[in-house]
Structures are given as structure tokens and as C-alpha cells.
Image (cartoon, rainbow, N blue to C red; front, top):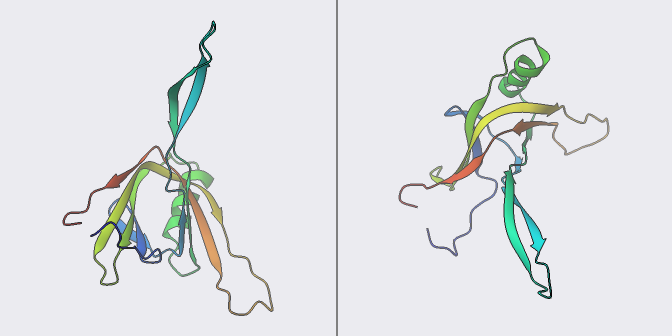
Length: 149
């Protein structure tokens, strides 16, 4: 794939433990941020030195149309609403081309659902789909190299 080739943002899937869980319409939170702090040098020198601190990974927010597939809500319910052991899982956000071939993948680790939002239901709203959101806390995300990409 050439650097100037653009990816379709709508062709992606989410896998949890290697299994495609659902086709989502939106994914936010593919980010990594490292805190940078400055130390001023004393004396007549007016320069500062920059150092890096902790790295944080924002939560992944996934949004999809309501369907009969409730695997992610079930995971949320079993993990946080019932008296069970916290079940962390690894997963991936996978971008595909128009032929369904994988182009790019971001793997996330030790994730668990921390928020579920049901659809906004309102009479008289035509043309809008009922959407649900699930938010996943995780402990890291890395871009994976796709063979032949």
C-alpha cells in the first residue's frame, strides 16, 4: 500500500479474543499519550529540559446499531453488574479494504467493559438508527504490521 492511498474509515471490525464480535459504525480512542514535563535550569541559563512521564491509553468507545447480538452487553453485565471475577480480554480493531482484506490492525490488551449506553429512543425521529455504545478500558494498544501491506 502506498503512503498516499487512503483507507475507508467505515470498513472495520472489532475482534475480542480473536473472534469478530460485531460490526461497529464508530470507533474512538485509538490513542496513546505520554505526559511530558519540563524542568527549568537554575542560574542565568533560561533553558528548560523536557522529560517524559507516564503513558496513558484512553478508553475505546465503540458504537453500533442495536441488534439481537448482545455479546458485549452480556460481557459488561457479567463483568461489572454481577458478583464475578473481572474478566479481561485482548482484542483488535481491524480496518479492511472493499474486498474484505485486512489493511491495518490495532491490538489492545487486558480490556474490560466500563460503560454501556443504550439507544436514544424518540418518536418522530425518522431516518435515524437506534445505536448503542460500549466503552472498553484497556492497558495498552499497539499497531500491528499486516503482511504484504
